[in-house]
Amino acid sequence: MSWELKKYPLYYGSVKQPFSKSVVVGNLIFLSGASGCSLETGQVLSDKLEDQVVVALDEVRFALEEAGSSMDNIVKTTILLRDINDYPSVQQVELEYYKKYAPCLVEEPPVSTVVHVGSLVKRCFEVEIDVVAVMNKTESSWEVNRYPMYYGEVKQVYPNIAHGVPYCSRSVTVGNLVFLSSMDGRSVNTGQVSSNSFEVQLTVALDKIRLAMEEVGGTMDNVIKITRFMRDLRNISAMWRVERDYYQRYAPCLLGQPPASTFLKSPSLTNPESLIELEAIGVVPGNKTGWEVKTGWEVRKYPLYYGVRQPFAKSAVVGGLVFLSGMSGGRTVDGRPALNDLKTQLVTALDKIKLAMEEVGSSMNSIVKTTILVRNLEDYPQVRQMELEYYEENASLLVEEPPVSTVMQPQSLVNPHHLMTIDVIGTVSR
Image 1: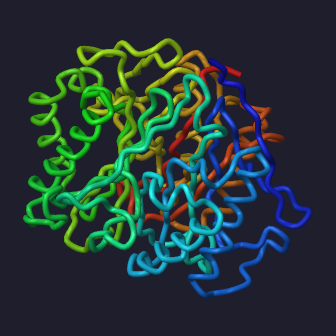
Image 2: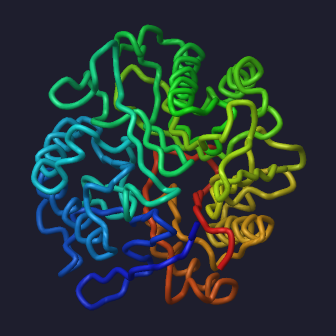
């Protein structure tokens, strides 16, 4: 199977941006976060949420058509919101847009995660939409299958959506790759949060991931990446304890080969009673007894050490794709921040990304997507400038053909002294 790579540049007016509009990897398409910013002017023309959602969806549609695909081929969305209370309005606009331009998604929506952020890359942005799609839903070895979300016996499609539940499928498989919607502590029977205990909610979320993986023919052992959205980072120690106990019972392989991981603190989640959400990516195995998968979708994991081995992997390789854990400015010897200095921390994070890509037999030139989490939005222009300088020295191909990128300001990073975290998807070689 082919993992051929093609990038499409992004322009605002005639000005080329430091990130691409889209990147095609084999049959997958990764897009930069789309906002209410006009491609003609580079300016936000309306402060009305609904208008910005339409502009963002137009940008997604144009990018997919330029790459030779269509809105019907979207498999995953991540919706970033400055105000979580805006989500019902976003959902309504999204649905009406799909009815017009992507009717297949009305009954079979993408998987989805909704993230409440402190701010987006420009403070005038109300929403940003990050998308993964495919070129062809029936491409050999890349076939797309969607599995609906149910609460009780009610399929979660409009107008039956439970309160606060994203309009989404439970999972979508692309070949042997599995994208899951974010899972929280709501009961699959009632759609309600039944406990205010962090440990109970986390166990429910893990149960939902496990059941979703089993539904597509896999197991919990086949999860390769988890992104954690938490209301209170003081629960991290409890989280590791609950996950370790859960893996011992249901996913023993993950004790020795844990998933890659990224953390962020969110002011609130889609359900106001939720304390944690987990977004997962997995792989459908060729059998249910191990890691064996079809040719072209083999899995490798690389452990992470900060002095001692960490409970999450440095990276996970699936076929020709590389998923890295979020890389911060923490030192490799102990994970502690490398000075309270933006440049030092950014170079430290990029050095870790470079070494992680080289460890899997690839290079920094093979990065296709970055998600940049910055603690202070005012640092963003400097981050982009230093990133370019790093690429000029260490990954010259990314200067002219940069990755797609999404930027956000979470309420906090996993360590309050970290100034940024960079989440990366790459390819094995270029």
